[in-house]
Length: 148
Ligand SMILES: [Cu+2]
Image (tube, rainbow, N blue to C red; front, top):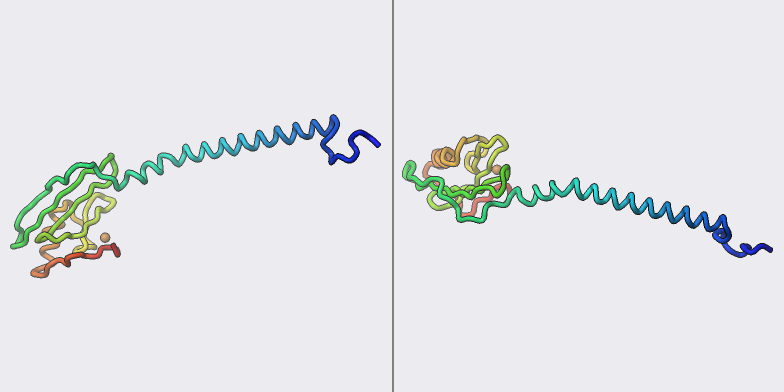
């Protein structure tokens, strides 16, 4: 009977080498996994940062963009600049004090819930066109836009 009988293949000189090999493999695998995790985190960090800031606006009071009487209706808008270059500015357009939901298109033009399939170069053009379309009708007090 040898000194290693009864053990399960890890004792003796060959067994010690096996333990070292397994240990080295484990260390290499762990180091690779940690490296891969760090690389993934580094690659995703700018995306997460952009996602967090894309809707954030500068923490300042809104700035008046325009206010006028157009065809007997009071139209006005205020805006908040985007917090970072490329982020979206926030514009609040009102007709007779009621909010008109607006969206900015990818090309920089604007559309509203009243003229949803037309583009306007500025929120002022958009507001005037909404008045043209509304005629004597008032905006809903809480207009829905894309279910929101
Ligand atoms: Cu829309």
